[in-house]
Image: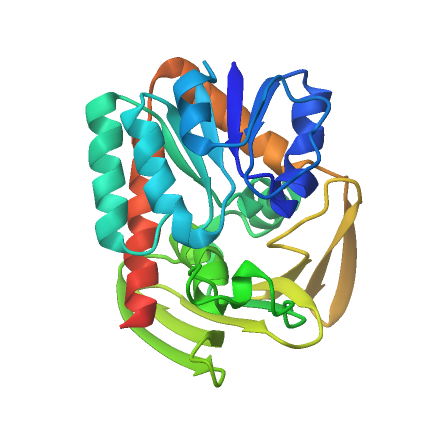
Length: 304
């Protein structure tokens, strides 16, 4: 397999580059903004169209500002590439449906790179609770310091803002852990003077449990998930961006006692990509189509 990377982003360099090098996966990069060439890249392009026309890759990974995801995912699919896109895969449900339509017609894999649940801590927490069926309440918090003014996250033009950046985490949490049909959703959104969304809260009532999430730009860093069952609760830290080079801890409180479980380090992108490669080889893509549509529909409800 050979991969074409559209965009030499900090996310790519932090999460994906070392994995590709470690696994000896051939990759090439197309970047308009970066002057420095990555020495390990098979080829380097300064033009995205040129890269799509000449890279001879099997799969395109799109790591561009949010506003460009849909346009270049659509182009890559129409050029007969399999495609993975940084979250969010697109701006709305209509765009998601259109991408799926093209992917099905072209018989190509299309996946969104929201992969926090591929870390060992997530599996261990569910195992400790004997599966999702016993979860009564899910509480998540993801708060980061205010991004720099020149960051794409602070640009309305580039589809920045807290809702676009973090709502894929809320959508995936609801899909993975919400039990039964979504009955009600309440949302609260805050904007800055420029009209950019800087925080949002969501409360969901499902048939058999509840989900509350708080996501924010501008505050002391916090990144956790607490799962409540009838007689215990489990806290996972660094849930949405788990480091690949550090061991983590799961905190379990039961019968007024606190237990600490160590979770060995795990490369969450490597685990995600292993599954992608499995479905790629089997030519079975419906799993990704379904999750994209479910999450896009949830995210659209957040805005309405």
